[in-house]
Length: 171
Image (cartoon, rainbow, N blue to C red; front, side, top):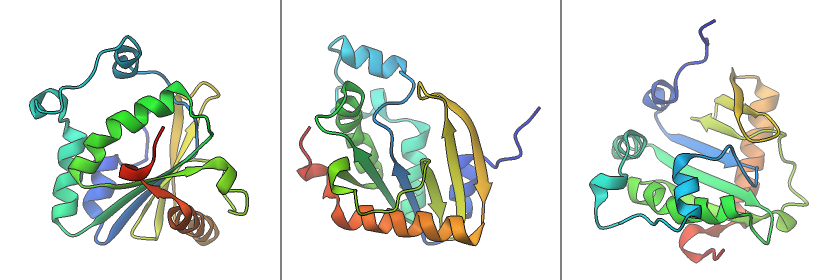
């Protein structure tokens, strides 16, 4: 049965001002890129064509339209291998135009956090990610429920305020 959830590119394409993403997990389903990194393979950052993907171009194009894109990650410390890899590849996100910050989980105790990762578009529409225990996306949900939007917006801003910019966060 096809999903009724609009694709990420469509949602970002509708955005006029902002898109924020909150990530709360210490690991997600492993990818080929993660497995390669674990084997010691590294990205040749000078060879942009080897790592630049359609996602990166979408972000660049969206930022060029005047949309601010921010991503915050709440992580346990010491960080997992997955987070160490994610920190490494975040260079691509930053190059594309995202602002990224990291918050150690122990500094989030006073923040009311939602139970799921999400994207919030223009402060009004949520795309909530539901994962299995091993980090596989089970489904995405779209909602404009005012209570959910309010909680997620406040959580993101509280995390953002406390978090460390990517270039200063060490793993």
